[in-house]
Length: 126
Image (cartoon, rainbow, N blue to C red):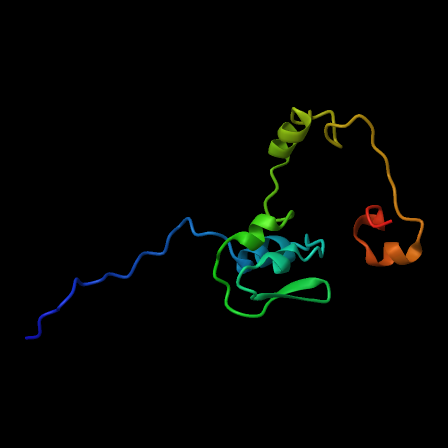
């Protein structure tokens, strides 16, 4: 009978609290058609496994589930109440459908080419 020289290693159970990865982003953002096309996820991947084709991020390698792509995605998990409290001092009331605001304005670039290529009407670009 052969004797083991080292401790018997058990497979580590998969953690229930693993960080999110690109597959989670696909499910919550891309699958729900919430992606704004900002490419923050692809630009921030420290392993370089996210590419960007057309208007969608794509996995070019093996996701390491580091959580960074989900953390930088403004559409992944957004806690409106936390943001309102942090920036505006309070959460919106039920009677405030547009949130805590002094006034609401609508704007877009007058340049059709900018509107064609920019997000949200090209206001920041123009």
